[in-house]
Image (tube, rainbow, N blue to C red; front, top):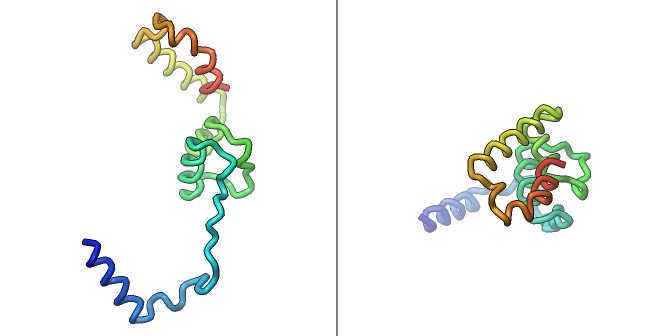
Length: 116
């Protein structure tokens, strides 16, 4: 399979199909524009930005998962957050997480991360 693709690229180069591409002869911009973000947010931000969900003027240094969720879904109201919290509560009840000592120990951190 690799050879077929390589042959097609070489053939296109010989036919001059890459001669008029924008930016030809200019150096590539390899700077990581997401370097200040955590790996999880960086991945999500890159996907949403490429898909056109995140406005250009956004300050990516202060983004949270809540912001990314808002961009992806368009839900800004407290009702959306209430629904997420309700679903999480239902999940925790179904799995009986409140009986788990580890969950009780980290519950506050989990709630702060998810719902603040």
